[in-house]
Structures are given as structure tokens and as C-alpha cells.
Figure 1 (cartoon, one colour):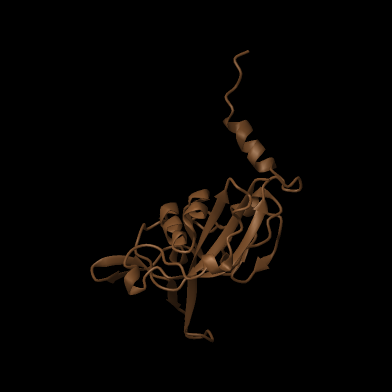
Figure 2: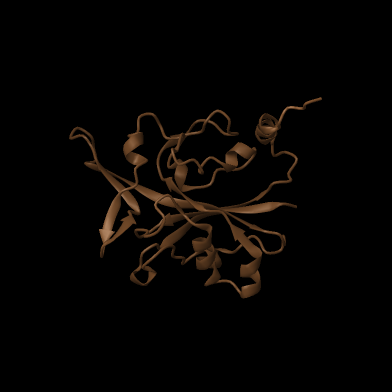
Length: 209
């Protein structure tokens, strides 16, 4: 069985680190504080991608459809491979057209002690005729975990909670809270891989015969 564990953490404090993602090494380092050396060495992780906690609608290629509140704040069920990549695109194409897409996709920066930090939330003003005067959007971090030994995963909530990513962790920066996690068996026959097969076919060089 080839299995991965999807994890979604919500940022609780501003993050000081790479401006476009949380590196896999940073996530592994944080996990290492809660794992024994043998288990830690067996785990691999992807980069963590920043995700918006906003209303969204599932793109056509996904197994689900319709509008979902705070689509970036939890992990939808995985029935086809496209579902795995829903929260991995930096442009967040699932955002509703009624949302301020360009503004929301721009991560706010705050300077702390001369160090630029990515804000853990985006606060936007609203029109005077609207009920609330401002809208707050939370940012999350999405990553995949993998281990060659199937007995290693899933990692428990006690391991995935209480983590911090990035710099100045002694001052509380980079604190995250576990929002959701799920295991996905990539060998499931029901998992439609037609998208991946199509991509392979397009990349395959034409035969000279």
C-alpha cells in the first residue's frame, strides 16, 4: 500500500521564513520535537503550501461540486487524484468570483524586529452598507507526509499539535494549530488517475519508428 497523510494546520501567529511556502525541512524539524529518532528518520514531508480559509466552489475536475464555506479550512474527501491538489495551487482557483481574489492572494507582511513576517490572518475593510465593517481570513498550511514503512503513518494528533515553523520560535512566531488530517491510499482502485495518465502521455516523446 502506498499511503500519504494529508495535514492542514492553521497559523496562530505570524510566520518568519520562506515567503512562498514552509519548507519540508522546517516541517520535519518541528515534527522531530515529538518523534523518536527512528520514526523521525522514516518520515518524509512535502513543502507546506499556504491556503486561505475562504468560501469556495469545487472546480469541475474534482469529485465534489458546489459551494463550500471556508473551503481552505478543512480537507475534503479524496476520491480522484485531482482532489489531492485542490489546496496546492497558489492562485486558489476555487475562490468565489465574488471575492477580492487579487487582494486575498497577496499575503500581508508585518515587520517584527526588522524581520518581515507573513501575517497569520488577512483583515479587509468592507463597505459601509454591509453588516460587518471588516472581514478576517485565516491562513493555513497544507502538507503531505509519507513513509516507506506503512506502520509509521498516520502520525497522531499529539504529534501534529503544538508545532512551530520558521524563525524566532522562542518568541512564539510560526505557531500552528492542527485543523484536519486524513490518510489517502494511492493504490485504491477507485482513485481515478486518468489525469496523471493523460499528463504522462503528453510528456512522452513521440516514437521515431
